[in-house]
Amino acid sequence: MLHVTLKYVRIFVGLAVLLVGIVLALPFVPGPGILLIIVGLLILSDHFVWAKRTLHWVKHRWQHVHGKHEWSRSCFGLIRKDSSQ
Image 1 (cartoon, one colour):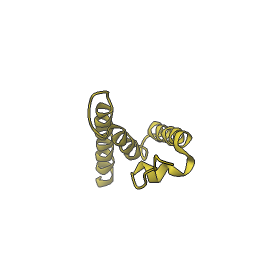
Image 2 (cartoon, one colour):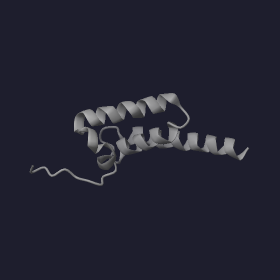
Image 3 (cartoon, rainbow, N blue to C red):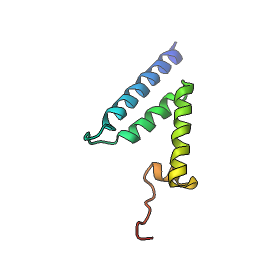
Image 4 (tube, rainbow, N blue to C red):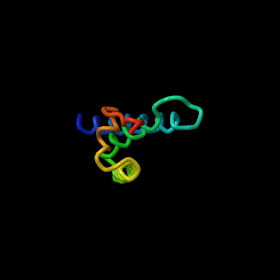
């Protein structure tokens, strides 16, 4: 019973984080919208195939734009590219 309850709590939290991220990603709304969308998709990807596919698509688009080796490091802000190079 506890396992089922935790599953529904994770789904609810994932959907809430995803919806808040979508609202914060709107133009003229300050906040970390894109980051919250990614976190919401990460939470939901354990339970829904559509979330896993969307997260996979986002990862490949990010790698296409920014390079293959920067996904995990730059996603969490651990490195910064020097703009002078």
